[in-house]
Length: 133
Image (cartoon, rainbow, N blue to C red; front, side):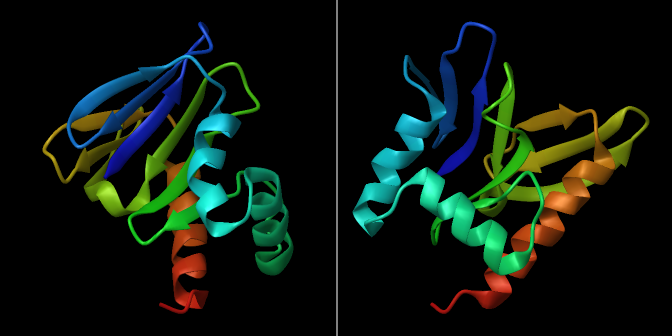
């Protein structure tokens, strides 16, 4: 299960998946599309449909499958981006400079924007409440 995906200034993707760091020299779009093609869709269509259905204005969470719902912390359109898998979050708590997220595999990540993180959680729950399994 993917825990998170980071893109740094070097435009490489750093993916933590099943406690393993995977580095890919490809765009976020290409990486995510490799999963979405199995559902006969792509990133652009997923964003457009999700945005329209839920009236989200920005930072659209990406529902990929039953194990992957990517919360948009910093969009892939920016120089540095962060996407966290909703299903890999164990717990989180507010800290002075933002939020600390504990993952199911035991490691933690600190983010600077607690309110932005809570907004993403709310959007993810809206999506999950709508999806039929």
